Image (cartoon, rainbow, N blue to C red):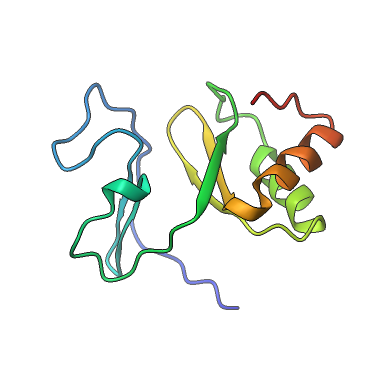
Length: 120
């Protein structure tokens, strides 16, 4: 697996309002190589090149301070040890984890067993 650096400097921002191109519970990423969207299944655009359905999500209740190190690493390590794949996205204040629907309850149980306060 190769790691490629991306030139330039970036900012993490919190906006006051949702851009008109997005809706409730949409994570939009635009890079020089692709455009990705995480959204409710009902909101998948008809012209999407690919759509991988069947994900469930939970959040790390925030706001999380940027100085807190290792939160996402700990969560992903615990899920990896349980052989649960994940897709992670972050906002300015918190992290969101998506797992396949069939592994969702197991993921929450693993995190609760690891000491996390899981609220359903």
